[in-house]
Image (tube, rainbow, N blue to C red; front, side, top):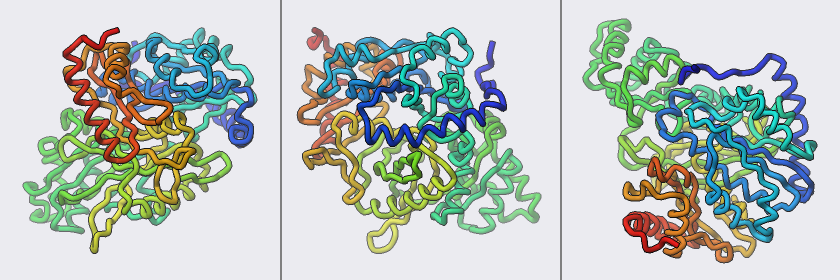
Length: 520
């Protein structure tokens, strides 16, 4: 029996040079995607949530987050592309059909014939890549699904040593960051990158290992700023705000301590009792996880007025830095630290600052050899004369909470992001806006199955319309019945239209989930 938080296998030392040789094919594959999209290829989609298993277990139904990459099924609109979608548990046929029916210009039967859905039948909270690697027969079946290998590749949620090992086993390159760069996307690594690139970020300390390091960092920050009321602790591998903890400083009387050791002792004594965990859990468990992962301590700014914008970049295998989008994150929970969703695009007055900082960081990372999608989170505080001060918070070297909604819109409409005005333009020149969340359903919707949701929304007239490019697209549909969780991207012609669709969707789900008139 494998322990829930045991370390996953990371392959043999020979994996790294073999992986580099395989990755060397990426520039040619990238060129062919742009210049010859009709070329035959197989795309293997591995939506493995390759994160800390203990943190995954806290999500509840983490296997359903693998459905967030189902937007890749829209690649089947290219008639010579085959797609293999991997998952921990079977994805219902109704859900697969739901996405395939969005495809423009390709018969449903033609697209379905080029799609293979493969499941390892394992609902445990371990990463999917790990589950595949421990199943030789499944791995061999997967190998036999890959044809046209010269132009084939892997799309992943995040590229870790697990994905590297699987890429070597399949002889397929990964369109993503090398695992050797993963440290750049930790909380500590992000702070180092910000400092090297000269991008503003909050004062704090990185590469902390335990409570002693935390206490020393807290004392140093208080001595620098005696007015400091709170600090924030962040786990190196935390995500969606779940790895954050807040430490109030007022009752510790750090400045009154007669010596450095006494000040450190007071912080150590207060840590287990005074830590506040917006993501839930106990201080003891949090500090135990901190010792395993490491992390940072930063000053926590006071004041109610703040924004949490995020920027998406794509670093191509040719070394280009592409601005992909900006979003305003919707935050909630204690201290507004939990990610709930996002609005596209970010408010206009933040665009220039986000683009500037993003390009600076993107060029720095590209110079280090980083490839693939990434996002950078910021905190914006009001400055003088209506301006905003941006502070970089973290780099996510993976597909984040805003990625799937933008990619779905791109694939569905054929449009693209225009950095010049920060908007998403259709081929006609019209703009589109959206609000997205991983949890749009009210408690009353729990128990609805995939077909129930599709029937209900279609009856209400909220279903995404491929001719008007307006409506609601759902994700994580498989988690609705058991966990009462389903995500939605509400696409409108104006920001107000997107907001209206979002509110209408919540209302309809709440009201109609108590009825049955929409069945059939």
